[in-house]
Amino acid sequence: MELVPRTSPVVLLLLSLLGLSTGAVIDWPAEEGKEVWDYVTVRKDAHMFWWLYYATNPCKNFSELPLVMWLQGGPGGSSTGFGNFEEIGPLDSDLKPRRTTWLQSASLLFVDNPVGTGFSYVNKSGAYAKDLAMVVSDMMILLKTFFDCHKEFQTIPFYIFSESYGGKMAAGIGLELYKAVQQGTIQCNFAGVALGDSWISPINSVLSWGPYLYSVSLLDDQGLAEVSQVAEQVLDAVNKEHYVEATQLWGKAEMLIEQNTDGVNFYNILTKSAPMAAMESSLEFTQSHLVHLYQRHVRHLQQDTLSQLMNGPIRKKLKIIPEDCSWGGQSASVFQNMEGDFMKPVIGIVDELLEAGVNVTVYNGQLDLIVDTMGQEAWMRKLKWAELPKFNQLKWKALYSDPQSSETSAFVKSYKNLAFYWILRAGHMVRESPAAFVVGSQLF
Image (cartoon, rainbow, N blue to C red; front, side, top):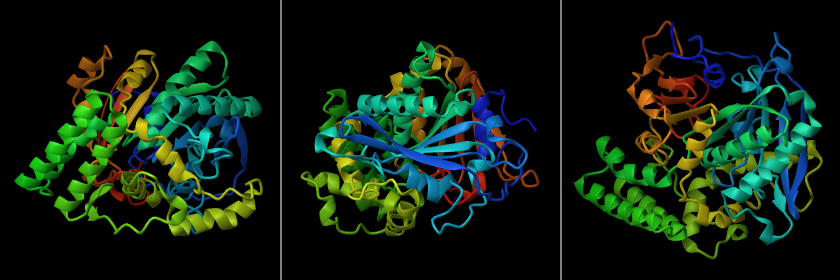
C-alpha cells in the first residue's frame, strides 16, 4: 500500500512512531533501558534540565535508530513530566510500562524549556526567557553541551518533535541548529522538525476559530458575529505589532468562545472544559488576564497527580534537583515573561527551514480548536517557499492504522521536504488519539 509519495526520513520516522507505516497496530513491550539526565547552565542564573532515554529495540542497537527531542507547549509545560509520563516515555504516570512508548523506534531526549519549566530553574527573576530568540539561544547551548558530551549521538539522525507552543520553539531552534551544524559549531546529524498542532501563526488560529466552531454547530449566528468581532481586534493589534495587547485580546476571544459554546474544550471540541480551580497563592500574577490564560494552557499539563509524581518518587530518583526547586514551581513566571511573544508569528522561520532544505513535517488534530486545522492551512498558504505551488497541486493520500479496516486514520500530502498530516478523530494532544495512532486518547 502506498502511503506517501516520497520516502523522506522524517516522514518515515513519523509514520513509524505513529503506527501508520505498515497499517499494523503497534504493541511494543516495555524494556528497561539506559537513561541519563543532567543540568546545563545556559546563562548566568539559568539552568536547564534534560533527560535522555536510549532506544530499547530488541532487534536494533540504539545507534541504528534516530534520536528525537520532544518539546512541550505552554510555554511552561514540562517535557520531562507531561511528554515523558503522559505521552511517549517508557513509563506512564502510574510508573507502569507504556506499551506504546516511542523507545522502540527512537532514543528520546526530553528537555524542560524555556528555563523555569519543569525541573529547569532560574536563581533570579531577571533570568527568565522573554522571547523566542532567548529560548533558541539557551537551547543552542544545551544542544552543544549535550552532543559534545554524548558523541555517540553525533552521527545519529536527530529530529525535533513538538507540541503546541513547542512547535513555535522547534521552528526557531531548528533553524538555528541548522546554521550551527553548517558552521561546525555543533556536531550532530540534524534531520528535521515535526510541528504538531503548533502555534506558528497565532492570528490565523484566532481568525479561524469562529468559522470552525460555526461549521460544527458550536456557534450560532450571533455567537459567530461576536467571536469574529474580537478576532478582528486581535488582528488589528497584531498588524500594529502591539503583541501584549494582542495577547490580552486573545484571552478575551477565548472567554467569548467559552460563553457561547457552553464551555467547549479548546483541546478537543467533542468534550467540555473542566471548571477552573482558583489560582494558588504561589502562582499569583500582577495581570489578571494572564491568570485565566495560564490556567487553561499550562495548568492542565501539571495536574496534581503528575506534580506529586515528579516532586515525589521522580525527584528522589534523579537526586540532582536542588532543594529549593520544585517541578513546575516556576512555570507561571515562564508563561508571564513570554507574554509579549505569544502572538508573534514565525511563518518566515518555517520558510527559511524549507528553503534551506530542512525536512518540515506539519500535523494537526481534526478536533483541536486552539490550533485548529483551518488555521494551520491558512498560514501554510502564506509560505513563500518556491515549491509551494507544486505541493498545493498534489492530491492527499489516505492512511490507515489497521489494514483490515476501511476506517481512515489520516490524510497526508508531501512534496520534497514539506509534509502535512490531517489526523482524524484527534484533538490538540494528537499523540493520545486512539483512532489516529492507536496509542492513547489525543496527540501533540
